[in-house]
Image 1 (cartoon, one colour):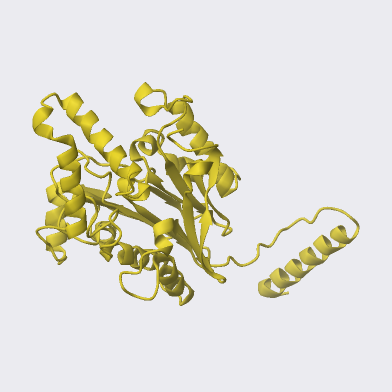
Image 2 (cartoon, rainbow, N blue to C red; image 1 turned 30 degrees about the vertical axis):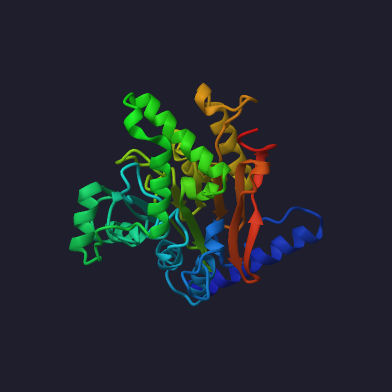
Length: 371
């Protein structure tokens, strides 16, 4: 008997044996997983902004994925819509600037099948930092380039460099914030920082700012029918941050983490809380151990709650006074969006064969951060 015929006959015999055991009530000896259904998951702004076009981030990414295009190219094309839309003041062009009125952007991306990653931080003058992050992964031996180095790298790669990424709105919001803190009256850095936080909270309470705009960011992850997983996170960072501040978004394992054999996770919200525990990495590791994306996300939120002990970061109930959200999918195509507080109205977006949807995040704690 030829080797090929032997292998085929052996396989048939094995299936027959598994079927006979199942028929007799025994557990089957082999599980054959069904094909993965393509899916895109993102923060809620991924199904809101269209930059004057007809499709949102998740729609664009899903359409490209189902046409057979590379998953990373698809999710980056999706977030480009948001980066370029001046109406979203948390990402890219028109993102809220730092304390000196300068828009500094961060981004990271990871390609599961290729085991590639790239990121930029504190880059100025480029509307689409996600594309620069991809160039870092494809054109260099590095994972992260920052500041002037990122700016020069983008210029050398042919990206358009602009003098100012502020829009009339983002500049107006910065001037309002500056007016409220009146820094000339606060020579003590501690008092100046406190005045800045207080002014931001006032503007949030008055509805001048959306909560998601204050912390910024869009995360978008996708999986195709072959089970290939990629992700990207991009942001203008914390509104009115200290110049040079880098949050979680460009840090692999924090703002984004992808393992092509397991899944992907990303975050929006308070970056410092995420950075302390490298929480996106932790979510993927929890999924590696068999946890559903929702359960993995909840475990991370419990970890953040336990790690938050500074009085300035606690509300009257002794729980975190900030919001943070995670978006996760696994290699089976299962997904979840989770948030610290049920009452925060945090939402996330998906797109699958049923079309784009915006869904409520599952919360760990009752109420809102400020309660």
